[in-house]
Amino acid sequence: MGLKEDFEEHAVKVKKLTTLPSNEDLLILYGLYKQATVGPVDTSRPGMFSMKERAKWDAWKAVEAKSTEDAMGDYITKVKQLMEASAST
Image (cartoon, rainbow, N blue to C red):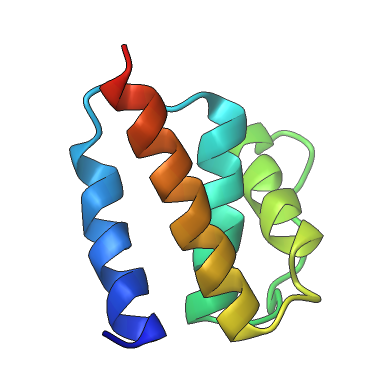
């Protein structure tokens, strides 16, 4: 299985977690997913009254130096960690 297929499989698996990840973990996943699928941030930072959108933008901006492959690999690793933590609870 190639990296892209493995990434897509884990993008589906993360939606089936039995426990909701923390907000911090969700932001990490969001940033890595956007970097892997879109690339570097291509929008301006949301205003200070859009806190949720701003946090998501910041999470994406934090990983924009990663290549698509690195972002996919890190996303897969994070999903595996969350799956292990979910299984142990």
